[in-house]
Image (cartoon, rainbow, N blue to C red; front, side, top):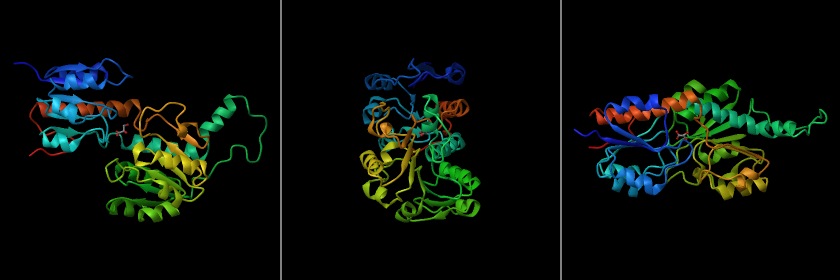
Amino acid sequence: MTKPYVFITRKLPEDVVAPLLAIAEVEMWPHEDMAVPRDVLVEKAKRATAILPMVSDPIDEDVLSAGSALRVVANMGVGYDNIDVAAATHRGILVCNTPDVLTDTTADLTFALLLATARRLVEAAMFLKEGKWKSWSPFLLAGADVHHKTIGIVGMGNIGQAVAKRAKGFDMNILYYNRSRRPEAEEKLGAVYRPFADLLAESDFVVCLTPLTSETRHLFNREAFRQMKKSAIFINAARGAVADEQALYEALVGGEIAAAGLDVFEHEPVAADHPLVSLPNVVALPHIGSATYETRRAMMTLARDNIIAVLEGRPPLTPVNRIS
Ligand code: DGY
């Protein structure tokens, strides 16, 4: 009997892939740091029973309709806005993601980005490396305090709550906005629910951790930045398109907000001359929220195990959709 064909869109370590080889023919895009071209992905989908894509690979109607034998798309990432889940469900294709295994790692990065932006760490390190340090002076590279300030978390899922836990350690006042109230976060972390506009107006740090959906696209628009304090710092570790980048740029240049820390952009990857990256009051990172060796291995392992489960006729471990 021929083995099912699995296509993995990036080169993953051999030991991670090994358990799949017993039950499937596996092909990997051979490059670690170059995305698979769209036409190649569509071509591979034609033969595939399973695809393991990265969060940067669009799995849209073209890919899904090419995959006449496709049974599962197991994303390596908790976010799955790169996948047309409605189209997959319609075609009876399971979609899986990698929740939980990256929660603390992503929360660590989010908080690190908040600290780096508030305390101007990147700028300060460059200042020293470039030989500009001539004397100690009272306001040299002075930033904003983090402790005892108000953090407003937009998107109080697992990562949002893990960020709130870190904020509690910094004696911060924690506000949150979410589609539904989170009584467990209110009880355990002392987080206080606020309507979106109130959170924007009251927070010193506005932290975006909400998934990208049709409802959250450009949630942070001109009006939202206008509602923030002039001293506010905006942190985005979710998806770039949750913020309107032009509106964010204007808010930063026009002094409507003080600074931003961005791990994500609307169209990734971005170049060094991207308007937001060039601003002195922006700390910009190349989407590294979950990028530790331990966590990336855990994510690829979970994605792999989702595929193994489906190929062996078991329910996937972390499905996003249901096929009836
Ligand atoms: C995710 O898992 O969605 C992250 O953005 C990838 O690091």
